[in-house]
Image (cartoon, rainbow, N blue to C red):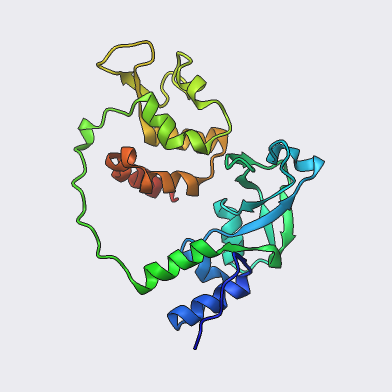
Length: 236
């Protein structure tokens, strides 16, 4: 039997039906979220939320990424509450209170994301050998260029300007840890774990985006253990 084609922006029902056909197991919204699928809602331009739209953009799919918003969905909420998302330029942004409320059937899932999940479930790759983490005391920090590469796309602020401003980005005892041995005007090193929590607490970068950065950015690989340990201590 030919599988039902999946729309490019599929509804929750269409997504669950397609995955059930592919995997032979039942799916619901909670399971989609547990497996890491990002839901989106289509936003039309409004003066109230003009800060979300770049010049000339009248509508775009906004991701539901804030962990409390996705937890509501997984728990069985009857609507979508968007309090943090990404703007039309893919920068993280906090919505003005009370955020945006939309009906549950406004959720959409991208076909490419759903197909990738099905591929991972049906054809799991063998786990790669764990890399040996660098000794904790050898982790001195990452450079400004590495910070911008790892976190620059997650914030709406001018991160480059903040890093080169002469003080630690969150005060003298903040994320800046030491001078780089290769001296220069902007040669400080930065603790990416402290920096990430500061970006979350002060600049409201959604935690899922920071978790993804530590899971996928090669420059942060050596810091992953310290990041996970800090998350566990904070109950994240």
